[in-house]
Length: 234
Image 1 (cartoon, one colour):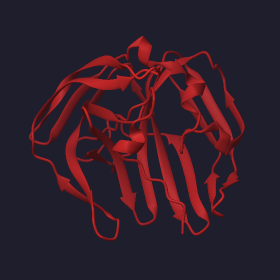
Image 2 (image 1 turned 45 degrees about the vertical axis):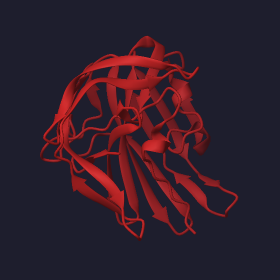
Image 3 (image 1 turned 120 degrees about the vertical axis):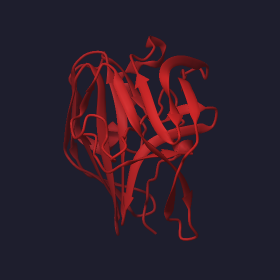
Image 4 (image 1 turned 180 degrees about the vertical axis):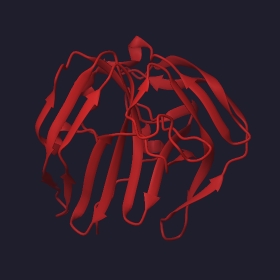
């Protein structure tokens, strides 16, 4: 069988990480194709609920409910919750949210973001380099608006899964690496490509693409916030 990687609510619940994914009514992500979103993110878009059919394919249904959003649930390394006040709501299925500067207690040295993950993992690259490992950062892997309920933004196509990871950095920093093929015990590989992410102080959008191949998965990461992704709630 192929080695496949998918991200949902359970995968997103990582220590010191959450998922924030953006869109707007016409499907455009805030900031368009640009990777830098500013010191404050204005997030908007139609929200969809996701289920799976008998063949394990995603099914999306437009959400038309209303929920107030006053904070994002973050978790410190010791397991305690960290308040992150935000301003916004889902109104009639439309998201409108303002996300500012993360609380200092939620941030880690940027190198910690690239440890042990399926996408942001320095062990999947050769010549991995961070220009300044002391920069404090937060990777938002899910926007947890209630206990056990998160929203994120992604796109599925034939043998392709894509998503956006939002990364806040306190100062400019560059992260780069050379791609390689990493073998797994099941005989399949994670294949990565060269990347160079020039983060600017504030919020940055990181796009990941996973292609499902016969020999495993091929992963690409770039800065960008594509136009054709959906907000997903689960």
